[in-house]
Image (cartoon, rainbow, N blue to C red; front, side, top):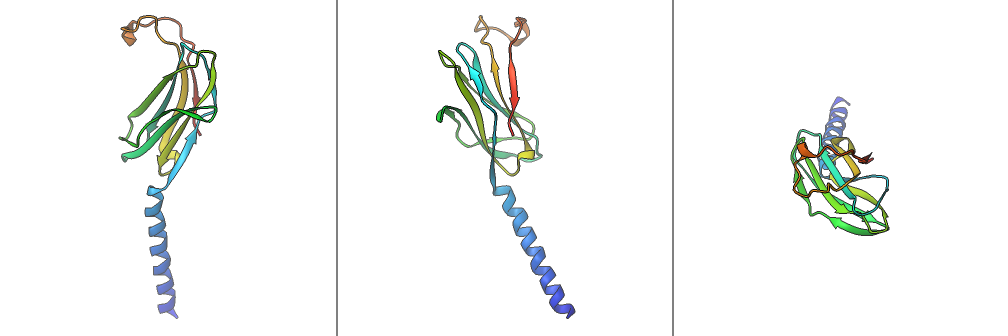
Amino acid sequence: MKKSILTIAAICMLFVQAKAEDKSAQTVQLITPTLWVKAPDMFACNLTNVDDETHAVEVKIITNGKVLLESEKISVEPRPTTNHTVQGMPIGAPLYCEFTVEGSKEMYRGAGKIFPVPANKDFRASDYSAPSDTVIIPAY
């Protein structure tokens, strides 16, 4: 009787370990709500890896079912943020971010944001003191 219980326990442990290993290869998506973006404002999708390991991610910026920007699979080290931007549409359009990530959603922080384009294209961030109408929404 004890031998059969030990056998079942060993099989269960192997199954749990196999499931845990498989979870890291699993992909999930984080998606932001849409924001209405009108040119000349810019739209950005930012994704930060808050896990302790490097992970492969893909970023898409989408409007009305059309992909405006699609990154290739990129590796994101722990803590850095990947940033992808497009300019808003001439009459405005709803834009959102779609992040395809490895592992679980808890390993990432994603956001979509609208921000104004500085008048001087050769500006330094420290020189830019104009008021900002930046809007940022989280991905979930």
